[in-house]
Amino acid sequence: MSSDPLANKAQAWSALFSEPMSELVKRYTASVGFDQRLWRADIAGSLAHAEMLAAQGIIGAQDLADIQRGMAQITQEIEDGRFEWKLELEDVHLNIEARLTALVGDAGKRLHTGRSRNDQVATDVRLWLRGEIDRLAPLLSDMQRALLTLADAHAETVMPGFTHMQVAQPVSFAHHLLAYVEMFSRDGERLVDLRRRVNRLPLGAAALAGTSYPLDRERVARTLGFDELCENSLDAVSDRDFALEFSSFAAIAMVHVSRLAEEIVLWMSQNFGFIDLADRYCTGSSIMPQKRNPDVAELARGKTGRVVGHLMALLTLMKGQPLTYNKDNQEDKEPLFDSVDTLADTLRIMAEMVGGTIDPATGARSGGISVKAEAMERAALKGYATATDLADYLTKKGLPFRDAHETVAHAVKIAMQRGVDLAALPLAELQALNPTITADVFELLTLRGSMNARQVLGGTAPAQVRTRIAAHLARLG
Ligand code: ARG
Image 1 (cartoon, rainbow, N blue to C red):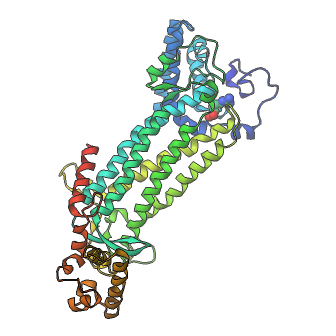
Image 2 (image 1 turned 120 degrees about the vertical axis):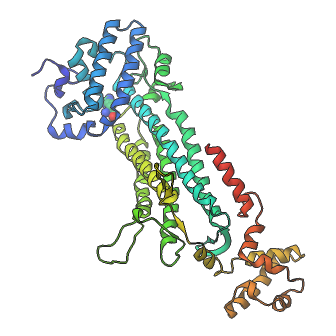
Image 3 (image 1 turned 90 degrees about the vertical axis):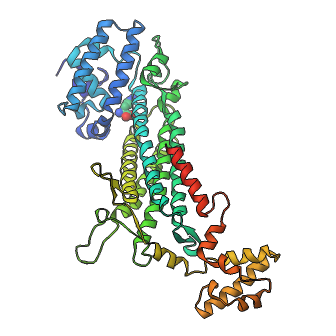
């Protein structure tokens, strides 16, 4: 048996244990297979802790120097893929600490003074997540830029707006895309807001009650770039709200992606034929030679399931957990990791597929959604999309809106029987329904007339849409 206590799991924490852990328990309890991903945060946290311990005179200057030297070597080993992760050392924390002690001796054993893996892991996950948040924020902005790039060309492109999946009123394609920009922009706000609560330092809480060493928690917070301290040691080691908030943000963002993905799938289908996608985002069929399937959009829609699932997993993980740290919390990582990865990849690929990519050599953009404007317009002409405009027209002539609504229902019925659009009904026929109708009605009954009339703030009139595009672009900088 080795003299290094960390080298044998039966004695990793104390001599109290009289028999080694079974292989099955070892495998069941170990997290190193996945939490090694936290290694950079773990080392950063340890270095900040050690530097503070030395500044407070709790460890010596030489100890600090040894710890720094050891951690530099470990960093190199991990980066080079030479670090040997050991299952029997359970997790990322014990693996790194054991290696440190093997490299620098007693200084390595002093590192854990005034600290527990409970406040250590909470610190690591927060540090790691903060870094991921800062990588996700620009991806959300890129997604919005991609939508804005496409929208910019289509403020005048008419498509049917739907409610109940039935043609409702004409809107511009740009206006439709801007709805998604609003969603992703709110996702960005949520991310900024939750980052504040992620960025708080648990270290100093130790196992649960705080520590008797004179730690300078503010100093550690400053070193690690935390904005605030967790102010209750019990809460510091057990709180995973920050993970819940992030997961809920990620689930909402993926739900937004899934709605866009679904529309892309619909629009590309032969029955809509509103858009086409670049070949690079489509796949063929092994049996049907004519097929071009929007697999990327379908997968984005499908992967939303797992991210929503991760939120449920974490909520369930935390529900009913007594204070303070429980090993249950080790289960917070995989859902969080997968939500980050899935969301990041999905935002990247969707932004490319929507807005295209720019060739760095030529500056030319290619690969974005191509719009079939005539097909959109034809579809908008199908469902009497301007019926509300006729009702509004009558209301402005003095008819109460409910009566106008009823009159237009008759007009639509007549048009349907004839198989024509409202705008194709003869003036006399309209006047028979209501004598106040004059020839100026026809301008309003066209798709563009209807769209142009919606000048209200947030409406689909091209001027409104252009204003909103400019505001979004200014916000994104
Ligand atoms: N691997 C553990 C986790 O992820 C680290 C904390 C262990 N703490 C403990 N008291 N066993 O939660």
